[in-house]
Amino acid sequence: MTITLTIDGKTVSVKEGATVLDAAKEAGVYIPTLCADEDLLPFGACRLCLVEVQGDRRPMLPSCTTPATDGMVVRTSSPIIDKTRRNVVELLLSDHPEDCLTCPQNNRCELQRVAAYVGVRTNRFRGEKHAYPIDDSNPFYRRDLDRCILCGKCVRTCDEIQQLGAINFAYRGFRTKIATVLDRPVATSTCESCGQCVDKCPVGALYPEAWLRYGLPAAETKTICAYCGVGCGLILQTRGNTVVGVRGDPDNPVNHGRTCVKGRFGYEFINHPDRLKKPLIKKDGAFVEATWDEALDLVAQRLASVVREHGPDAVALLTSAKCTNEENYLLQKYARGVLGTHNVDHCARL
Image (cartoon, rainbow, N blue to C red):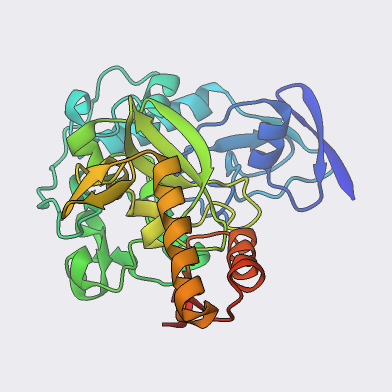
């Protein structure tokens, strides 16, 4: 069932159960927000997505938690809405670091975009600043709580998507922050390093360690994770010929954007200087580079020689979880149909 409503003079139809924010996106109307996310339940924390609903006694409503109803007439901008949004952003910036040029999220920061949209050019409020130490205990990402805006995306992602609950809001008032159990460093917490919270963070509170070494990514390429046979979709973030980051592909039907720690952060081997880029053949006691044809011919000759001299059961094949199901099928078919042996094993059994 669909319902029809009007947003800033535009008529839009959405499915029953959609929020006003969903309807605005469908109508192509931008409403600023820092806590809303399509993958997470409505939260209503940032109070930036306020709108006016004709006939409602309440002056403003958060569009991310307000259900759209049939015949509803919504205004997303007015003097009071615009002033309230500016006040909210100014308050967020009152205890936020002002070093945007050196922030890892510079030009990718949602707070930057929202501040520019609502027209904050100067900050009237000069509040007390936090001075939390940067948590670099985790080898894959850093946590800078000075930049945190308490949108709760990381907490909700860990709870709703990963269902782990490794972090939550702690303390009260100005001392409120995102903390692990007993406020321990990330490395000694129950965090599984899936990286989902890093992807969701709208500011520079969470960022990959690799960005400090390689810089921000300049391009993205979709691919399939090679760590196991599940077939999770990944998006490789590259800078030149260097992989500087990975995130899950939300369009992939296998993982829907989710990743494990290996898929998310186990990409350093790609650029490692010790990685073999050409086959090696031992000659006169030393390994020398060879072509693929030379390497494959040598393997075929040695396998045939072993089978001929000692029988097919003198050979065994060990397949890998990094291969696809089709590749593993072909390997066992090769073992049985060509080599004539049933000695086939798989690393997942070990």
